[in-house]
Amino acid sequence: MTLRLLSYNIRYGGVGREERLAAVIREAAPDLVVLQEATKPAVVARLAQATGMTSWASRPGQSLGFMSRTDVAHHEWHLPTGATRAFLEIVLAGSEVRVFGLHLHAIHSNWTERRRVRELRALLESIKRHQSGLHALLGDFNTLAPGELLDIRLMPLRLRPLVWLSGGYIRWETIQIMLDAGYVDGYRIVNPARKGFTFPTWNPHLRLDYIFLPASFGDRLKGCQVRDERLSGGEASDHFPLLAELEIG
Image (cartoon, rainbow, N blue to C red):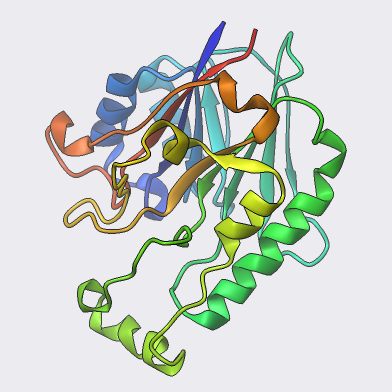
């Protein structure tokens, strides 16, 4: 069985863009969607209905939510010690597969990168009991992978001073922590030469959205692609969704 797993930051709760968001999701034909900035449960409910998803969950003011056409046995938001944002755990019915959705803090600077490092380490510590089983971590990590470059000239003017105050150089650590913890970067192992930019949709130049699997299950990933929402006839969000195909049994 192959699980089509979509990560999608719908921006500011998705209010007023439900039709465009639903069109993007329907075109990707996922089984399970992990949403970021899904702060409006009414919007998530409308998206679930419009995309044929039989179950969904969202909380007011909580970034993470999900929609699924596959039966879900359990879902829960967790706020680990040392973190200021909860992550979302989803367990599929009839399976031991676990999906962990996350949305790390934004803004590019050394200060905010250290904050993301603390958040991620807290999450990894809280899920270490699941290390031996098949699981995926995905979402908006708001950071760059080792070797990828931030072009300051493309940043909004209001954010450039944070990079200058960081000495003009940001030490990207968050993704390396995932790799050092024994995970593989799903998009990169499937697409070693492609840029994979997911943000912003009007001028893509950053890869902020990721899916990670334990290295021992890397061969279960059968595909991973950035879905260019512009092909669906309009700008639905500031992020492109990331679609992965995962063999789960």
